[in-house]
Image 1 (cartoon, rainbow, N blue to C red):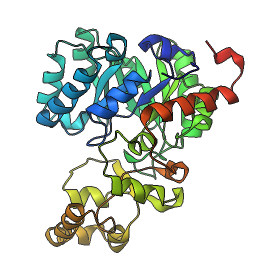
Image 2: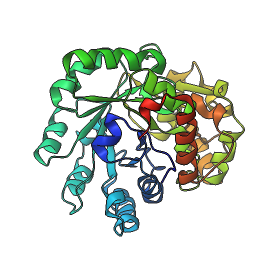
Image 3: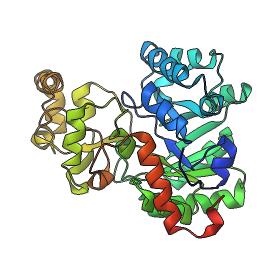
Image 4: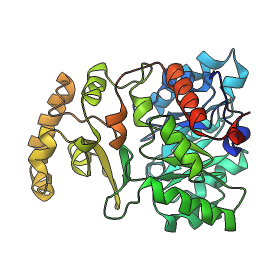
Length: 340
């Protein structure tokens, strides 16, 4: 647990020592990472991603097993799902809701969350809904979300395409202002470009109740991302990432409009930039090269999923070390009004 603690509505609601939430990163936020974040006093969301029920069973149960002897930490464990994928197959969601340990929260991203929020409400499970624009806010308020994630386009992985996206620095206070007027009990946490205590402090000053951490958590010891991919990220800068649909096409992920994917811009990506229609026509050949890169960990071909904050990542600490450092840095930058 952090030696200091930050006190916000978000930390109070979920019994946290720090107003931090682990992003439910598909194939990276597994049981070990989630357990480490929950033990360290943060809200920890396992990456339910595309709804692979076997993967979720393995990783969520691993987290539960690691936390069962510490009930307070177990009470900080939850999960996240891609909403449009649930509309196709909700077996992983169904399995989660049938577990004896009630999730602390379930996060829903990218699609109409209404019916899923209702099912969570029926089980008294708080729903966390992610948005990328202020005009998406009223729909998730009406659905009954307890927490809104305001995701700036700086974020790694999936988000709204750049032509429609917003920066974290302006999106968060706009969302916070709207909520203060129409749904003051609904919380907002910031996401996108937050990797250290400066980013958390800035998020709180912008009106957020906390922050969701993705890329920085991806580059910790407990993350399921490969060690070699983490080293590629450490060598990169924020200038080296790009948002596009190219890696989704190469992976066969049929993402709907208006969403695309931020990762490090590598040689294979550069080859297809501006040629997405041609890529679709030659997808078998191109996908074969991509898959060879994944198998051999050749990151000129395979992707590395990080956001613009990658230039602030210089090591791979444990999650406990990272959270303690973030809290300490944040306390240094905030007034005593935030201290317990």
